[in-house]
Length: 160
Image (cartoon, rainbow, N blue to C red; front, side):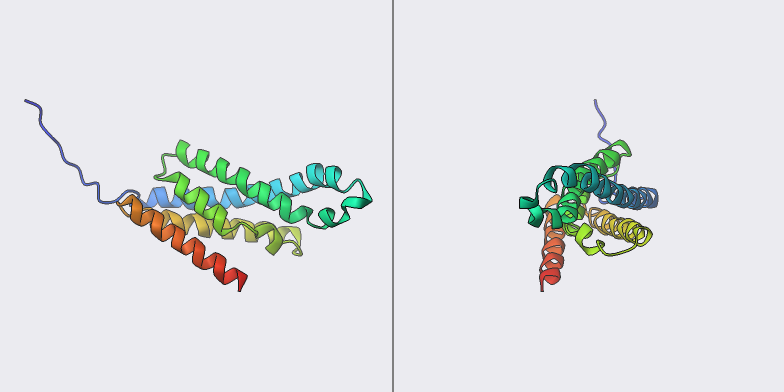
């Protein structure tokens, strides 16, 4: 007869090493976000949009557009990195962090490059840390609800 072994599944990501790895992935993701925003803005958007004088209005918005494209690409890279590192529920962490930090390129646009790089790394590490802490709950619907609620509250507060 088969024997059933019940393990403690009350915590999804309660190990400190998983949380530390999540924070490290977040910080590296922030650095990649800043670098990718510069590359996309300088070598893709500016040459395509800013060639003609008729598109001058779009040319002034090249950094926020590059930042939004970078946020999507970095969310994908972050999710793939977390999947490779066996971090629990990486899609929730990646998508919620991207939604939370959607206008980060606009926020750091006037800063010196080292300051913008450090702020990007700190904010991404903080976002990954926050959502990495939230995903510890065993119920998926609670995790999703709290994550969506936090993103909505922060996005509304930033608009006000």
